[in-house]
Image: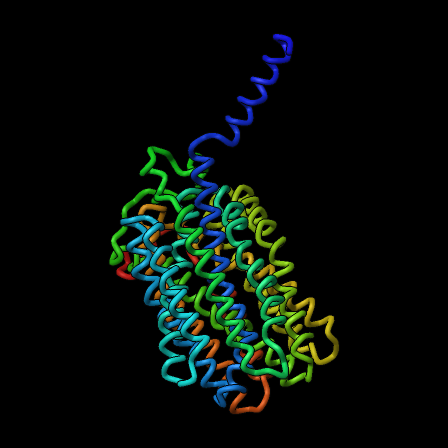
Length: 443
């Protein structure tokens, strides 16, 4: 090899090391990978419930309201655990959070697969699995936000959030094979398989997780381009943060979106099978479209949100505008779901729109909150916000979805409720301020 060739090879290798070998790049990507696994686990549990709940009710003789109450209880404990995990994340980083979540998920899901008494179902699935999933959302979203800010956040979160549609798609296929239509007890095999998958994924997240960049002597990636975040590094107490309208506005917007979203996630398969007479296999296949499209929509909408931020020149404004798009997509998807009786094409398009909604709102609310309040106190702020939102929204959405069916005999009322909630979320998002200055005490 000649001297010039060796020089060119060394220069190329140095370029690669400069692009991918920098400490902040390596550590940041490790955080994204850990968050991917956490999100995969979280949404794997949620997506699987929509397929498992009918066989659970059939084998054990419980009503739809009873089975849905277990999911609602899971979301209550999810919310409570999210608050404490946010504070733990700010102090200790994500590793201990993921490790405890792996233990709780393993015990909760494997034990649920063996239950025959309703009280044990509520305890194992509602409490233990709920506590497991509650440790994942705040930890994954805030970890990525602590490493990536400004016009870099949504793109990287979009990659991490791809774990959700991958779980939605892959586990829908897996559960469709494991849960046999003429064998109601086969849901137990599906639940045990879910326990094994979640345990393995969260142990992987534990190994990959990293603390905040400051612990490594690094700055957040994208920190030079955070226009519109004057309070970016202010340390907020919870009392200070929650005297500002911005947090209550985003809580209400997120809560109403979550009521609608969780009603859809938990009831849509049953709507297609019970109201429209579809086979379980057909309903599960259409439901899987959300996950399949979401694999592409997560990074695409993440990049679109970052472009919106660049175009606005103000991160809070850009995040607010993309949240409006998300709620509008959810509303439109509900309208199309109500037309599913006229053809499967309406249901498929609705699922595509839900995949794009899903790619925007859950991460977008964190992006907006981070733009207003900064990174330093985001764990505890978003932990308490999640306690409020997830303790109310998913509980009401999933429980009312089943209850309306029990009362009315169909899921039409449930879908109309979801549509109303999406519309309300859009209206609340319009009121979100761009700075942490609108305080209730009038200052």
